[in-house]
Length: 573
Image 1 (cartoon, helix red, strand yellow):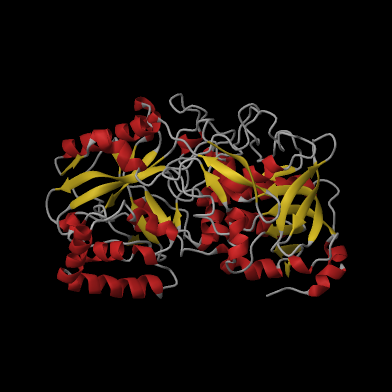
Image 2 (cartoon, rainbow, N blue to C red):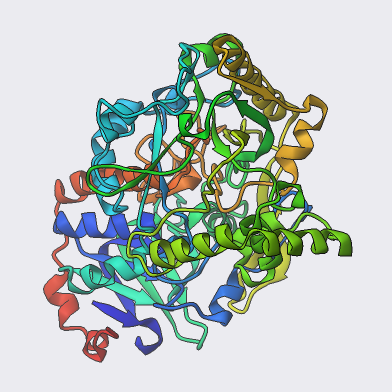
């Protein structure tokens, strides 16, 4: 059942087996799985079915340096489905070595293994609508698939790994009906959790305080609580709940909000491939079930360990859009239209103030490349705008066999990179966030080592040459700051409470009935986008909660809740 929380009478106390805070991919996946187990769930979602300016403003905060990190209200959407409303759909699992303790990656090592999570990846893939759980090109695309670059083979650099793309699936739109019909589920929209109230011994949750922007206030008393509010808001809620623990819930060792990671990413250098453009498959390929897939370059796990490199991948990409020297009418058109594109995707088109001469050269590119531009617009309209499964991104025909490498690298965790509360408060009286994201020289050096291996292997193959400006690498990688909406590690998982917030079951070390779902628990960031792994972790958490709650004297509240007067207000769908 879906209800507008504003219709709940003031002072109401709701009871359920589990209260899930946050209706993004993690919270929705978790709620549906808990319902399948027969548990009753109250799912609190701050937003509604569509975006709302006042609700979105609850994300407002500040950053230490906006050149390094976007304001907290960007790259996040406060509505049912969360930031899946704007994601690009890229799916890939973490690699087995991501879970290892690596001497060259401080604070690495998960308290669970790749094999512990592997059983949940196929279901996560299905929820994300990314097809089969198959991330090897020969397995996903067929044994006769053509190579990424004809003639290139290396034991040190793989080209067989790939990423798969969701529709991209807006989890709110896709799963609202299932949530509406799920037995024992109450989804409350416009419901903002403003405090986690502990029992006096600080070892368990007593209640959650909930408010709406219209002034309604009520509470939820669950057997277990799960925070699924993303890497930033999870830390905010834990730190702001200070009635029993002045330092914040789970923050006895000052770890909550620390070890904050994004990804290190940027377009670097020039890869020149010998031969004809037909020898390179740099775009998207479709699997037999119709899923868009794309291959990338990755240094082997063995070489990463030997050379002390963080995990990273590189994709073949076109030249910098902002430089009209590419002579592409399509790229120049994107540059000229950048102010009409959403913040999330236009930021990387804003590279300083362009001169009148630069604008003129971009206009000339559009004027002298009309056929290519028209063909691109037709393809974009039919295969992106109007298509149910959308073409993932801009891919252009390459006539010169010259590419840049789009790097996406793991960030090495460090305690000084953190999110914290500031003195300002939002419309609900909650303290706002201050984000102090930091990177290290080790992050840049690791990417440099990765690029050097790739360059060496291309040189040895004789089929291509990769060159980049070593002294400019840091600028290239940090030109637009931290990578987008990947907010990781602020309630990290580990075995030692002095350096982590939750254990292998995503339970807070110090609070036995409080759990965290989502990327906040990631101890390390991998080369991969976080969505698929956070969904898999949420499904694993659902099994953990079911085994604990059903194995004891479970509450059977569905009959009781169905008779509550507040439910008579009806669903909003």
